[in-house]
Length: 204
Image 1: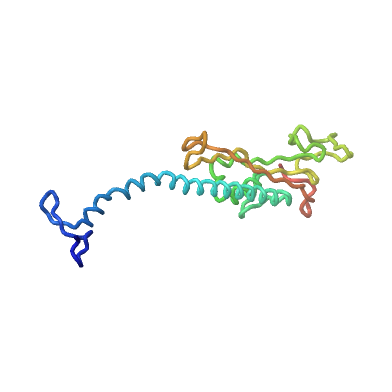
Image 2: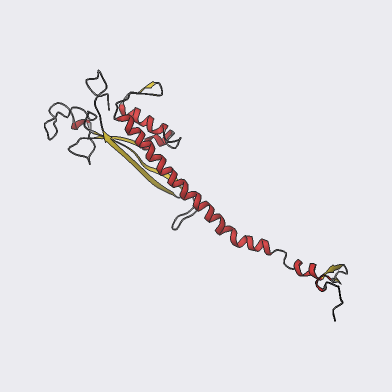
């Protein structure tokens, strides 16, 4: 019969080494290591979920940022600006490229500047970019307008970031760590009137 007033779970016993310990201590001591095993089981899914959310969120941010950058490039291009950050540009394309890079938070710096593409289209053909051979004396649009310059008013300017590479931090289905995806963003608008005093557009 249990002794009155004595916690049977905490009763003093002798272990195999002769040291005294409570039954309660022995019972909970057998659970040592459970937390480590449980953490090992949930660590991989937990970290995969965390980095997966971070990966997708950053990819969405990057795509939106590039879209904003090309749109800013187009807005600058339609006004025929030839000066940016206090420096004169050799061509309109060079200025538009610089504006796009400046609004890309450094992601289009250095060698990635080559990913910025500036193209000009005639209103008669919005699928094939104009080349120097498509314009000049004797070249006309369908409505009879002279097509003298690739970037003359009324033509379309398109700014794009094509095949920007991005590597995932964590593996996705059919992907390995470090494998890249590519994303492309485009923006376009109609070129406006020439600046006051200008009789011809700048070099495209």
